[in-house]
Image 1 (cartoon, rainbow, N blue to C red):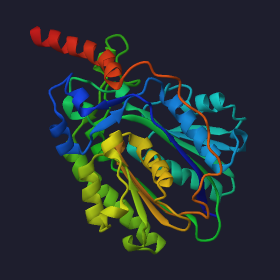
Image 2 (cartoon, rainbow, N blue to C red):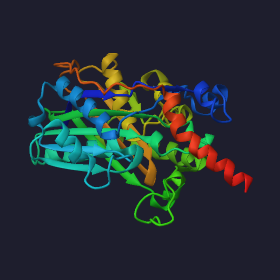
Image 3 (spheres, one colour):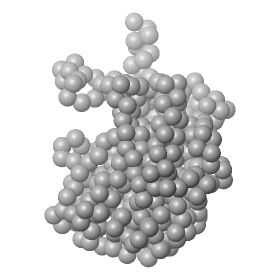
Amino acid sequence: MPAIITGWGNCVPPAVATNHDLAQIMDTSDEWIVERTGISERHVSHVGSGELGVVAAQRALAAAGREPNDVDALIFASVSPELLVPSTASLVQKRMGIKDVAAMDLNVGCSGFVYGLAVANGLITSGVCQCVLLIASERLTWYLDWTLRDTAVLFGDGSGAVVMEAGGDDEGVLWAEMGNDGAAADALMVPNFGTSMDRIRHDMLDITVQFDGREIFRRAVKGMTQSGLSVLSHAGYSIDDVQLMIPHQANRRIIDAAGHKLGIDPERVYVNVDRFGNTSAASIPIALAEAMEHKRINAGDLVLFTAFGAGLSRGAALLRWGPRAEPLGVSDAELPPCDATGLEIIRRHAEPMQARAAARAAS
Protein backbone atom coordinates (compact mmCIF):
# COMPACT_ATOMS: atom_id res chain seq x y z
CA MET A 1 0.00 0.00 0.00
CA PRO A 2 1.27 3.53 -0.72
CA ALA A 3 2.35 5.52 2.31
CA ILE A 4 0.15 8.23 3.78
CA ILE A 5 1.11 11.10 6.06
CA THR A 6 -0.44 10.46 9.46
CA GLY A 7 1.35 13.15 11.47
CA TRP A 8 2.83 16.56 10.76
CA GLY A 9 4.61 19.29 12.67
CA ASN A 10 7.01 22.16 12.29
CA CYS A 11 9.38 24.20 14.41
CA VAL A 12 10.76 27.64 13.64
CA PRO A 13 13.08 29.49 16.03
CA PRO A 14 11.57 32.47 17.86
CA ALA A 15 14.09 35.11 16.71
CA VAL A 16 12.97 36.97 13.59
CA ALA A 17 15.00 39.26 11.33
CA THR A 18 12.99 41.62 9.15
CA ASN A 19 14.17 43.29 5.97
CA HIS A 20 14.43 46.54 7.95
CA ASP A 21 16.77 44.74 10.38
CA LEU A 22 19.02 43.62 7.53
CA ALA A 23 19.10 47.17 6.17
CA GLN A 24 20.95 48.13 9.37
CA ILE A 25 23.94 45.92 8.55
CA MET A 26 24.09 45.91 4.74
CA ASP A 27 23.25 48.03 1.73
CA THR A 28 19.67 46.91 1.15
CA SER A 29 16.08 47.91 1.85
CA ASP A 30 12.71 46.33 2.44
CA GLU A 31 11.54 47.52 -0.99
CA TRP A 32 14.58 46.03 -2.77
CA ILE A 33 14.18 42.62 -1.10
CA VAL A 34 10.39 42.36 -1.46
CA GLU A 35 10.46 43.37 -5.13
CA ARG A 36 13.00 40.68 -6.02
CA THR A 37 12.03 37.86 -3.68
CA GLY A 38 8.69 38.48 -1.96
CA ILE A 39 10.43 37.93 1.39
CA SER A 40 9.66 40.27 4.31
CA GLU A 41 11.25 38.39 7.20
CA ARG A 42 12.99 35.18 8.16
CA HIS A 43 13.68 33.23 11.37
CA VAL A 44 17.22 32.95 12.74
CA SER A 45 18.12 29.97 14.91
CA HIS A 46 20.07 29.95 18.16
CA VAL A 47 20.29 26.13 18.10
CA GLY A 48 21.44 23.50 15.62
CA SER A 49 19.38 21.90 12.88
CA GLY A 50 19.10 18.67 14.89
CA GLU A 51 17.47 20.45 17.83
CA LEU A 52 15.01 22.16 15.50
CA GLY A 53 14.27 18.76 13.97
CA VAL A 54 13.62 17.08 17.33
CA VAL A 55 10.86 19.55 18.22
CA ALA A 56 9.22 19.27 14.80
CA ALA A 57 9.43 15.47 15.04
CA GLN A 58 7.84 15.38 18.49
CA ARG A 59 4.97 17.49 17.22
CA ALA A 60 4.53 15.23 14.18
CA LEU A 61 4.50 12.09 16.35
CA ALA A 62 1.86 13.62 18.63
CA ALA A 63 -0.31 14.48 15.62
CA ALA A 64 0.00 10.86 14.45
CA GLY A 65 -0.79 9.45 17.90
CA ARG A 66 2.58 7.69 17.89
CA GLU A 67 5.44 7.30 20.33
CA PRO A 68 9.15 7.56 19.43
CA ASN A 69 9.62 3.79 19.62
CA ASP A 70 6.85 3.23 17.07
CA VAL A 71 9.33 4.57 14.49
CA ASP A 72 11.36 2.00 12.55
CA ALA A 73 13.23 4.41 10.23
CA LEU A 74 14.36 8.00 10.59
CA ILE A 75 15.31 10.18 7.61
CA PHE A 76 16.91 13.59 8.19
CA ALA A 77 16.96 15.81 5.08
CA SER A 78 19.32 18.78 5.38
CA VAL A 79 22.22 20.67 3.82
CA SER A 80 23.11 22.14 7.22
CA PRO A 81 23.71 19.10 9.45
CA GLU A 82 25.06 19.59 12.95
CA LEU A 83 27.96 17.24 12.15
CA LEU A 84 29.25 15.41 9.11
CA VAL A 85 30.14 12.36 11.22
CA PRO A 86 28.00 10.88 12.60
CA SER A 87 24.77 11.66 10.79
CA THR A 88 22.49 14.21 12.39
CA ALA A 89 19.78 11.57 12.09
CA SER A 90 21.66 9.49 14.65
CA LEU A 91 21.91 12.51 16.99
CA VAL A 92 18.16 13.10 16.66
CA GLN A 93 17.54 9.41 17.32
CA LYS A 94 19.59 9.60 20.53
CA ARG A 95 17.90 12.80 21.75
CA MET A 96 14.44 11.34 21.15
CA GLY A 97 15.26 8.01 22.78
CA ILE A 98 14.36 6.01 19.68
CA LYS A 99 15.45 2.36 19.73
CA ASP A 100 17.86 0.75 17.28
CA VAL A 101 16.38 1.65 13.87
CA ALA A 102 17.56 2.76 10.45
CA ALA A 103 18.73 6.38 10.56
CA MET A 104 20.18 8.36 7.66
CA ASP A 105 20.91 11.88 6.46
CA LEU A 106 19.78 12.98 3.01
CA ASN A 107 21.54 15.86 1.24
CA VAL A 108 19.81 17.05 -1.92
CA GLY A 109 19.27 20.70 -1.06
CA CYS A 110 15.82 22.19 -1.32
CA SER A 111 14.45 18.96 -2.85
CA GLY A 112 15.31 17.02 0.31
CA PHE A 113 11.77 16.63 1.59
CA VAL A 114 10.42 15.33 -1.73
CA TYR A 115 13.34 12.89 -2.05
CA GLY A 116 12.76 11.79 1.54
CA LEU A 117 9.07 11.30 0.86
CA ALA A 118 9.89 9.02 -2.08
CA VAL A 119 12.41 7.03 -0.01
CA ALA A 120 9.98 6.66 2.90
CA ASN A 121 7.22 5.56 0.54
CA GLY A 122 9.54 2.93 -0.94
CA LEU A 123 10.47 1.58 2.49
CA ILE A 124 6.80 1.26 3.43
CA THR A 125 5.42 -0.12 0.16
CA SER A 126 8.18 -2.76 0.09
CA GLY A 127 7.30 -3.86 3.61
CA VAL A 128 10.76 -3.03 4.98
CA CYS A 129 9.31 -0.43 7.38
CA GLN A 130 5.91 0.34 8.84
CA CYS A 131 6.42 3.79 10.40
CA VAL A 132 8.92 6.28 9.00
CA LEU A 133 9.77 9.61 10.60
CA LEU A 134 10.86 12.10 7.93
CA ILE A 135 12.46 15.32 9.18
CA ALA A 136 13.69 18.23 7.07
CA SER A 137 15.63 20.80 9.06
CA GLU A 138 17.92 23.68 8.18
CA ARG A 139 20.09 26.30 9.84
CA LEU A 140 21.10 28.08 6.65
CA THR A 141 21.92 31.40 8.30
CA TRP A 142 25.09 29.72 9.64
CA TYR A 143 26.47 29.59 6.08
CA LEU A 144 25.73 33.15 5.02
CA ASP A 145 28.18 35.91 4.27
CA TRP A 146 26.39 38.95 5.66
CA THR A 147 28.37 41.28 3.42
CA LEU A 148 26.69 39.82 0.30
CA ARG A 149 23.14 41.09 0.06
CA ASP A 150 22.21 39.06 -3.03
CA THR A 151 22.34 35.82 -1.03
CA ALA A 152 22.15 36.86 2.63
CA VAL A 153 18.59 38.18 2.33
CA LEU A 154 17.19 34.95 0.87
CA PHE A 155 17.51 32.29 3.54
CA GLY A 156 16.04 31.43 6.92
CA ASP A 157 16.03 28.64 9.50
CA GLY A 158 13.39 26.10 10.52
CA SER A 159 12.25 22.50 10.49
CA GLY A 160 9.29 20.37 9.50
CA ALA A 161 8.51 16.69 9.99
CA VAL A 162 5.97 14.07 8.97
CA VAL A 163 5.11 10.54 10.09
CA MET A 164 4.42 8.13 7.25
CA GLU A 165 2.57 4.81 7.46
CA ALA A 166 0.79 2.44 5.08
CA GLY A 167 -2.49 3.73 3.67
CA GLY A 168 -5.42 2.19 1.88
CA ASP A 169 -6.55 1.92 -1.72
CA ASP A 170 -6.12 5.08 -3.84
CA GLU A 171 -4.55 7.13 -1.06
CA GLY A 172 -1.07 8.13 -0.09
CA VAL A 173 1.84 8.74 -2.47
CA LEU A 174 0.37 8.13 -5.92
CA TRP A 175 3.54 9.01 -7.80
CA ALA A 176 6.90 10.63 -7.07
CA GLU A 177 9.68 11.77 -9.37
CA MET A 178 13.27 12.72 -8.64
CA GLY A 179 15.91 14.16 -10.96
CA ASN A 180 19.19 16.03 -10.90
CA ASP A 181 20.95 18.26 -13.45
CA GLY A 182 24.53 17.79 -12.32
CA ALA A 183 25.95 19.74 -15.27
CA ALA A 184 24.83 22.93 -13.52
CA ALA A 185 25.78 21.90 -9.98
CA ASP A 186 27.98 24.96 -9.46
CA ALA A 187 24.99 27.32 -9.86
CA LEU A 188 24.16 26.76 -6.17
CA MET A 189 26.83 25.49 -3.82
CA VAL A 190 28.95 26.05 -0.73
CA PRO A 191 32.27 25.63 -2.55
CA ASN A 192 34.69 25.95 0.34
CA PHE A 193 33.41 23.55 2.97
CA GLY A 194 34.21 19.83 2.99
CA THR A 195 37.16 17.51 2.50
CA SER A 196 38.25 19.41 -0.62
CA MET A 197 39.26 22.43 1.47
CA ASP A 198 42.82 23.08 2.60
CA ARG A 199 42.76 22.49 6.37
CA ILE A 200 45.95 24.48 6.92
CA ARG A 201 44.99 27.59 4.99
CA HIS A 202 41.24 27.52 5.47
CA ASP A 203 39.49 30.50 7.05
CA MET A 204 36.02 29.67 8.41
CA LEU A 205 34.89 33.18 7.49
CA ASP A 206 35.33 32.21 3.83
CA ILE A 207 32.40 29.79 4.02
CA THR A 208 29.45 31.16 2.08
CA VAL A 209 26.75 30.28 -0.42
CA GLN A 210 27.64 30.61 -4.11
CA PHE A 211 24.43 31.47 -5.92
CA ASP A 212 23.74 32.27 -9.57
CA GLY A 213 20.29 33.80 -9.21
CA ARG A 214 19.47 34.17 -12.89
CA GLU A 215 20.48 30.59 -13.72
CA ILE A 216 18.65 29.23 -10.67
CA PHE A 217 15.44 31.06 -11.61
CA ARG A 218 15.43 29.69 -15.14
CA ARG A 219 16.20 26.12 -14.17
CA ALA A 220 13.97 26.14 -11.08
CA VAL A 221 10.85 27.14 -12.99
CA LYS A 222 11.58 24.58 -15.71
CA GLY A 223 12.45 21.80 -13.26
CA MET A 224 9.48 22.29 -10.93
CA THR A 225 7.08 22.48 -13.87
CA GLN A 226 8.57 19.41 -15.56
CA SER A 227 8.42 17.32 -12.39
CA GLY A 228 4.92 18.48 -11.50
CA LEU A 229 3.48 17.67 -14.91
CA SER A 230 5.28 14.31 -14.97
CA VAL A 231 3.83 13.02 -11.69
CA LEU A 232 0.35 14.19 -12.68
CA SER A 233 0.60 12.40 -16.00
CA HIS A 234 1.91 9.15 -14.50
CA ALA A 235 -0.81 9.16 -11.84
CA GLY A 236 -3.53 9.88 -14.39
CA TYR A 237 -4.60 13.31 -13.15
CA SER A 238 -4.51 16.90 -14.37
CA ILE A 239 -3.62 20.06 -12.51
CA ASP A 240 -7.34 20.85 -12.26
CA ASP A 241 -7.75 17.81 -9.99
CA VAL A 242 -5.28 19.17 -7.42
CA GLN A 243 -6.81 20.81 -4.36
CA LEU A 244 -3.54 22.29 -3.08
CA MET A 245 -0.01 22.66 -4.40
CA ILE A 246 2.78 23.22 -1.87
CA PRO A 247 5.94 24.24 -3.73
CA HIS A 248 9.41 24.76 -2.32
CA GLN A 249 9.44 28.31 -1.00
CA ALA A 250 12.48 29.65 -2.87
CA ASN A 251 11.14 33.08 -3.71
CA ARG A 252 7.79 34.46 -4.76
CA ARG A 253 8.71 35.00 -8.41
CA ILE A 254 9.76 31.37 -8.89
CA ILE A 255 6.58 30.13 -7.18
CA ASP A 256 4.36 32.37 -9.32
CA ALA A 257 6.14 31.46 -12.55
CA ALA A 258 6.00 27.72 -11.87
CA GLY A 259 2.33 27.91 -10.89
CA HIS A 260 1.55 29.84 -14.07
CA LYS A 261 3.30 27.28 -16.28
CA LEU A 262 1.51 24.43 -14.50
CA GLY A 263 -1.79 26.23 -15.02
CA ILE A 264 -2.97 26.16 -11.41
CA ASP A 265 -5.15 28.85 -9.81
CA PRO A 266 -2.93 30.92 -7.46
CA GLU A 267 -5.52 30.44 -4.72
CA ARG A 268 -4.65 26.73 -4.73
CA VAL A 269 -0.93 27.38 -4.19
CA TYR A 270 0.27 27.63 -0.59
CA VAL A 271 2.80 30.44 -0.08
CA ASN A 272 4.56 31.49 3.11
CA VAL A 273 7.96 32.57 1.76
CA ASP A 274 7.19 36.13 2.83
CA ARG A 275 7.42 35.10 6.52
CA PHE A 276 10.15 32.44 6.44
CA GLY A 277 12.38 33.05 3.43
CA ASN A 278 14.01 30.06 1.76
CA THR A 279 14.40 27.30 4.36
CA SER A 280 15.65 24.77 1.78
CA ALA A 281 14.53 21.19 2.52
CA ALA A 282 12.39 22.38 5.43
CA SER A 283 10.22 24.75 3.41
CA ILE A 284 7.61 22.24 2.18
CA PRO A 285 6.98 20.49 5.53
CA ILE A 286 6.86 23.86 7.34
CA ALA A 287 4.22 24.99 4.86
CA LEU A 288 2.40 21.64 5.07
CA ALA A 289 2.03 21.88 8.84
CA GLU A 290 0.70 25.43 8.46
CA ALA A 291 -1.71 24.33 5.75
CA MET A 292 -3.05 21.59 8.02
CA GLU A 293 -3.46 24.06 10.87
CA HIS A 294 -5.39 26.42 8.59
CA LYS A 295 -7.53 23.53 7.29
CA ARG A 296 -6.38 23.95 3.71
CA ILE A 297 -6.22 20.15 3.27
CA ASN A 298 -9.12 17.75 3.82
CA ALA A 299 -9.44 13.97 3.75
CA GLY A 300 -9.21 12.69 0.19
CA ASP A 301 -7.66 15.85 -1.28
CA LEU A 302 -5.02 15.65 -3.98
CA VAL A 303 -1.88 17.48 -2.84
CA LEU A 304 1.08 18.25 -5.10
CA PHE A 305 4.59 18.93 -3.77
CA THR A 306 7.18 20.40 -6.15
CA ALA A 307 10.79 21.28 -5.38
CA PHE A 308 14.08 22.36 -6.88
CA GLY A 309 17.45 22.78 -5.22
CA ALA A 310 21.21 22.38 -5.11
CA GLY A 311 22.71 19.74 -7.29
CA LEU A 312 20.70 20.87 -9.30
CA SER A 313 18.05 18.54 -7.91
CA ARG A 314 14.35 18.57 -8.67
CA GLY A 315 11.38 16.49 -7.65
CA ALA A 316 7.64 16.28 -7.20
CA ALA A 317 5.17 14.04 -5.43
CA LEU A 318 1.42 13.66 -5.79
CA LEU A 319 -0.52 12.46 -2.75
CA ARG A 320 -4.11 11.51 -2.11
CA TRP A 321 -4.53 12.69 1.48
CA GLY A 322 -5.57 9.97 3.90
CA PRO A 323 -8.78 9.66 5.91
CA ARG A 324 -7.72 12.02 8.69
CA ALA A 325 -6.89 15.72 8.50
CA GLU A 326 -7.01 16.43 12.24
CA PRO A 327 -4.14 15.77 14.67
CA LEU A 328 -4.67 13.03 17.23
CA GLY A 329 -2.60 14.87 19.80
CA VAL A 330 -0.52 17.95 20.51
CA SER A 331 3.05 17.98 21.82
CA ASP A 332 4.34 20.47 24.38
CA ALA A 333 7.87 20.24 22.99
CA GLU A 334 9.64 23.60 22.72
CA LEU A 335 13.10 24.90 21.89
CA PRO A 336 15.31 26.17 24.70
CA PRO A 337 14.79 29.91 25.37
CA CYS A 338 16.50 32.40 23.07
CA ASP A 339 18.06 35.49 24.69
CA ALA A 340 18.70 37.46 21.50
CA THR A 341 16.79 39.03 18.63
CA GLY A 342 17.31 37.89 15.07
CA LEU A 343 19.39 40.96 14.32
CA GLU A 344 21.56 40.39 17.40
CA ILE A 345 22.29 36.79 16.36
CA ILE A 346 23.14 37.93 12.84
CA ARG A 347 25.42 40.71 14.11
CA ARG A 348 27.55 38.14 15.95
CA HIS A 349 28.36 36.58 12.58
CA ALA A 350 28.27 39.73 10.46
CA GLU A 351 30.69 41.93 12.40
CA PRO A 352 33.84 39.80 11.91
CA MET A 353 32.91 39.32 8.24
CA GLN A 354 32.49 43.05 7.75
CA ALA A 355 35.77 43.79 9.58
CA ARG A 356 37.63 41.33 7.35
CA ALA A 357 36.04 42.82 4.21
CA ALA A 358 37.06 46.32 5.33
CA ALA A 359 40.63 45.19 6.04
CA ARG A 360 40.92 43.57 2.63
CA ALA A 361 39.58 46.70 0.93
CA ALA A 362 42.08 48.86 2.81
CA SER A 363 45.00 46.66 1.76
